[in-house]
Length: 147
Image 1 (cartoon, one colour):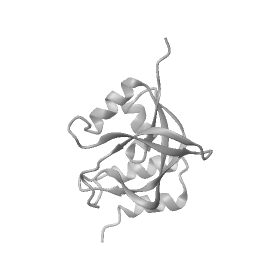
Image 2: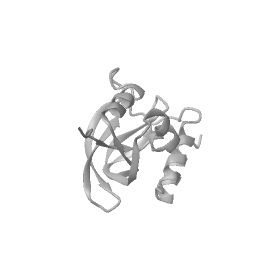
Image 3: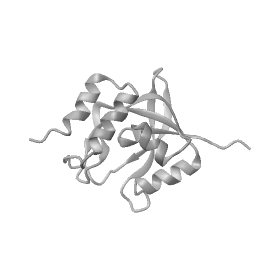
């Protein structure tokens, strides 16, 4: 019997190939995607989330996951503890087609804060690996600039 798969939209450190190979062996990146109506932030936990924002968009990576991968990500994203909610949103794939994808969102902690040590580097590395736009990568890097 064939195992079902889920599309997962990663916008933070799970864009990083080596991190996903460690967390979800056998998961497959299938291309870039954008999520309209949201913007990327680093919240007070020092990790990424996304928040609603009219005309903004979030760039990320679509992964093809098996059910066991979702269980693993639930643990890493502290889903059961109530930190990241498991949501489904319409994202646009690289061909501009809408696809429903799993997205983890922290709806409760939305204060912009500095990233944890080493975290932003993994995010940016993943963005570069998958060819996100230069302007978007520059925006990601700006979260590491301390004022």
